[in-house]
Image (cartoon, rainbow, N blue to C red; front, top):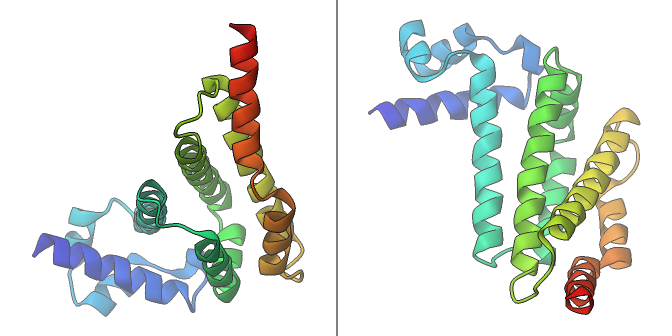
Length: 190
């Protein structure tokens, strides 16, 4: 029953996020929608932002599992960008919320974790330097975050999905090439 209630709270928050600014969603909104007491809400979450963090964490874990299993292909990244564009209002509200800095930090931490996994998966069978792998991951994370932030700052006027598609075309295979150069450099210096 506890996991059912927790899921109901998360689902209610996610639904409300589609129509309300992040700062306007309240515990009262959630408990009324779920038909639970405030105590029940606080049994599962310390505050409303912990629900948001849980939603973001669930999405992060979903992406990581797909990366680890090799299930993510180029088309999946495109679909992911399409979802960002489709939910542009949600992202914009998150970006402009009172807790925007906390949200940005969480997105940054999530992007770091995801890009670390991408680089680790692509490095399988390549004897790349650990420091180089971390640097490659950081480079791509910052590039992704920069594009996303520029898009949000511009009021989401530019076509993000098209920009990401162009970047993919321009940089396709560069992670593997960088890892191989790292391995070659290690080999030459040993």
